[in-house]
Image (cartoon, rainbow, N blue to C red; front, side):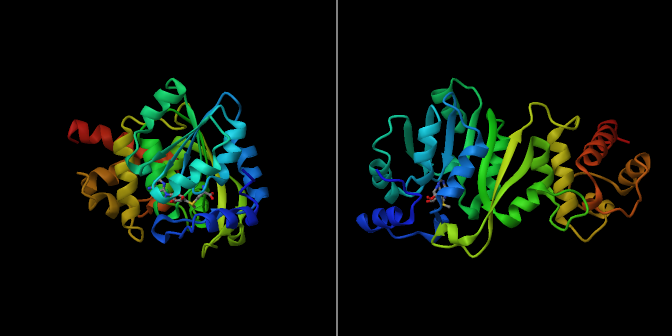
Length: 291
Ligand code: SAM
């Protein structure tokens, strides 16, 4: 099968199968060999690796992954793509295609079956309509993952990488940076896809930390604080937490901010991950001791 990264070959396959793009599945197929090679290089896949690909489409990136990895497991929701993938990947005996919704897939079972429970690498040109639930699902499930190298909307990549003070900083930045080291490795213009998306894209690599970069007594509690702080973005942190439905009184929040030598009128978007961890540890103790 000819390389699908070359536009003429993708067009030939789409014609052969009379394939209709489904907008609801975020189908924008890659047609740029340079971008594909960058993704493969940055994901640093070796012949020891088991790779999970989310949304293989017609198998463009899957072909590259199959050449570099020991095993590829590709989860695709669109049943119309399954016969096409059978054709385009027929040369490879190290690819397993699963017709399923990634948000309902048991990824741990894939790790166990194809990689003896050892950490897998995730590589994908993600469907943009579910980028955040996919990433959060991968992290929060605590499935063993070594790295996640993904194509996302440029704006979302910026959100994952930025720190306090940036307009893009929010709950996603903090969650990603708690679990992994983010690094944007390429910016990708719309003409590298078929059909062209309306937005710019970027490839971001998230290298999973073995140990979180901050100490938290209760990870879930810290994330509930973070969500409450950013739910009410234009309010002060104190208002956000007091009205956030997480059982905090104004006195508790004022005391905690004072202990941290932070202004009582500070906003959530000014706090670093380290400060959120510290604040959540103080408030957790207060809550536990009924202070
Ligand atoms: N990997 C291909 C490429 O780069 O050319 C296709 C990428 S396209 C942006 C996203 C792919 O994800 C599509 O094939 C789409 O059908 C699939 N997809 C969308 N939602 C999905 C879901 N919930 N679970 C699994 N695959 C999904």
